[in-house]
Amino acid sequence: MHKTRFIPAVIPACALVLALAATCLAGGFTLSSPDVADGGTLSNRYLLNGFGCTGDNVSPALAWTNPPAGTKSFALTVYDPDAPTGSGWWHWVVFNIPADCRALAQGAGNAGGALLAGAVQSRTDFGQPGYGGACPPQHDAPHRYVFTIYALDVAQLDLGPDSPAAMVGFTLHGHTLGKAEITATYGR
Image 1: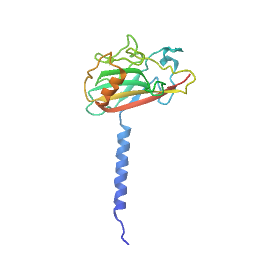
Image 2: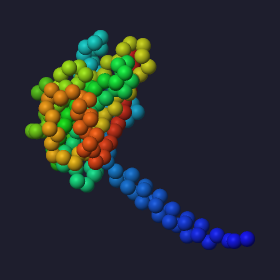
Image 3: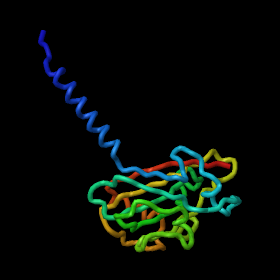
Image 4: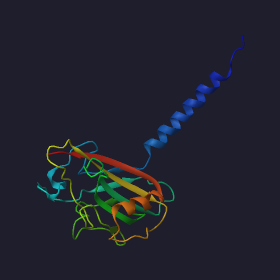
């Protein structure tokens, strides 16, 4: 019978890999919000005022940390994968956010909001640029609203405010270095 001696050497190597992975995850790219809790329910302040909903339609404050090395700009999307459209629903699309930016203030996605110079809000599924709050159909199970910040390898996307959200999403796919998400829910 042959004894295997490599197992004791493998255990410390595996422990080292796991420790390094935990360190990397602890310092990874993150998205947070003082207004929207990951796994929480959206409050009336961030719901649509229209389509039968009576929210305040204010975009929440968002902040991100530890973007990947080489990040040249950011993009932000808010997407409802549960919308009964066959393709979800885009609630907010912003790109060309400067690389030194680490936050968007509450209301930045609204008319007169404080977006940084050069940042572009493009058309959502509401048909216009800017933030559109949650308003799922009555009696649907609660929908998920996925807030995603993308770290990009280009300073600008060659798109404008009339670009459809799906086109922006396609373009993001080819330039994403990393992304971070928080997901909230809402049902009525």
